[in-house]
Amino acid sequence: MKKIFLIGITFISLNVLSQIPATSSKGEVTVLKPTIMVIPWVDNDQDIRSVLESDFNKRYAVSIMSKSFDDRGYTTKDFLEVLKICETSQMFNSNTQKSFKEVILEQSGADMVVSIDMETIPGDGNQVRVILTLLDKRTGAKLGSEQSDSKRLYTQDIGMLTKMAIDNAKDSFMSLIQTKFTEIVNNGIAIKVEFRISANSTISFDDETGGQGDLLSEVLMDWLKKNSFKSYAKKGEGSTSKFINYEDVRIPLKDQVTGNNYDIQEFGRSLRKYIYSLGLKPIVEYGRGVIILTF
Image 1 (cartoon, rainbow, N blue to C red):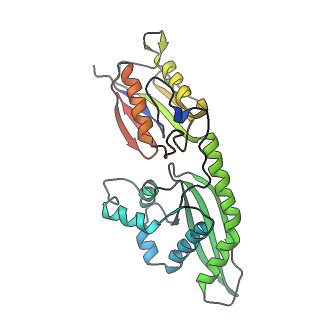
Image 2 (image 1 turned 120 degrees about the vertical axis):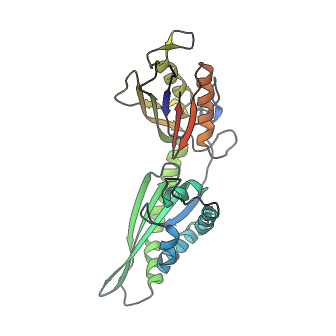
Image 3 (image 1 turned 90 degrees about the vertical axis):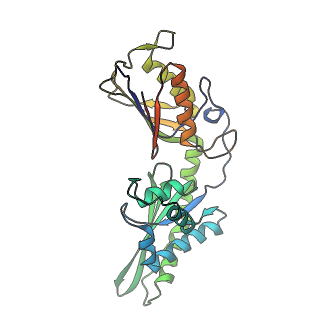
């Protein structure tokens, strides 16, 4: 009978039988500021270019926020340039089953992404409200947000009001970004790891493997704890002989040896090689923040 063993993960990378220096607890990468890309807020199913082309004020808001980061010494990625690359490479298509926002986040090349939304609030004069949201580009998770209003003035200059609202929020928002980024550098990125065995498989996590009397569940546990950032791998509830859930496994933002951004496929490759050493041959698939190994 064909054996199938499924492992679902979210972000990782290591060597086969020894701990990778990149995920060890010795030393930390010195990172002064994260690389930032500012994007307009859109619903997941909205075409970002259409939103920008139809709304000058949103284009202006993205431009003003990006310049604010540039002025503070942050390295920024040009959102429109990334958008152009995605369109040229035909990444926006029905076959990907990904939203426009997901594609942009994956291709951003930034450490963090800032989404900016704005609206004009009419009344006795005009007022602009902006909402700044910080996103982890790897997971798409919301890390924090801030709302800010301009003064209410008798003016039709929405751009001026937009800049006023952004100026009111940028200092505290950039402080939030640095705090969150420092937390990630020091504590690692929180990812989820799931191990699954399909219904028609003849193996289980209670089977012995590795020739040392350890169960499959135990060797996977040892590997995760040894190779996660600072050895942090928290097991979740509901594990069985067919399913194991690690709800919080930490991986580094940067490779501590090279200083390069960590790549999900690096960890997936190392995990696959380790499982190969157990005599199992997984097929690896990658999703957004997820690795799936099927046996």
